[in-house]
Length: 407
Image (cartoon, rainbow, N blue to C red; front, side, top):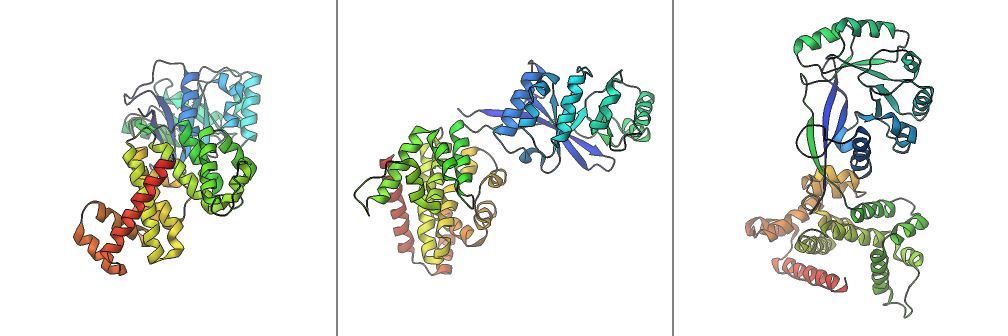
């Protein structure tokens, strides 16, 4: 059974309705309320599930990302380790303005991480924080507007400090908040928190994504790559089997050293192997037929590209292999593609069905769906006889069977 994460996202807007950023709120399910766990535990899980397992840009784009942080986690230095260029750390209202907390805020500032005081209530000692924080959030349910005006006016010596009105629930409250000096607004008047369900990647899947990224670097770091492979014993075993199946055609002695095997494969074969590994890992808890169909499509696309445009053969293989990733990951293909180090031509084909690669994927899908009229039009367009296409399909099936037997 696949594991999922849940996060609520609420926009923080300027006076014109443009998003400054989004506050991310931990949830345990689709029910839109804070779960019965500590704020520290909620933040730990939010960081692990939304920042480590996934790309946070999928949730907030280029906008700022506001995250609640108990001061106990700040003392651990957790935020420094998870630095994100648009991250805003919200110091909770129950924190005390101690010298230790002030030093932690200064460290965040030096690290390029923005800081907000959440649900701020004026008190002795907080003014020393103002030169180092970027935002102060004031709750309109807790503070009268007259008090908000006074706080904003008293902070006029800090021109970089911006104020956010929280719990804005009506048009009158929005207009009144704007009149007393607020520049940004958050509340039900604009948007209720939207709960987003995201499928969590397994450890195997995360390893596979890391491998694909590593083998797609302009210059491969083989020490780093060897370490990644070494984390997974079955993966090491499979790559040695794979390289020796290629190697034995040239030499009698087998290759047993992992690093040498990776160097021997070369970048293109490494990309091909790790792409197959990634698809296999993602398919592990799914119907095996989806993995088999991905492999068939990969080889079939590659064979067709060999006739139509041999320079696209490698990208054609990757396109066919990744053509079911949206089904396997249960996410829109547009959310997955930014994480894949593949060519722009392959991305256009997978997302929009465009270009020569998109044409080939369409041809294969017409064949699979028995859409014979459209299939014949595509075959005529590239001057390919139906019996040749059918032979390539049979060769792709045979190749997938051989791979399955070797596994």
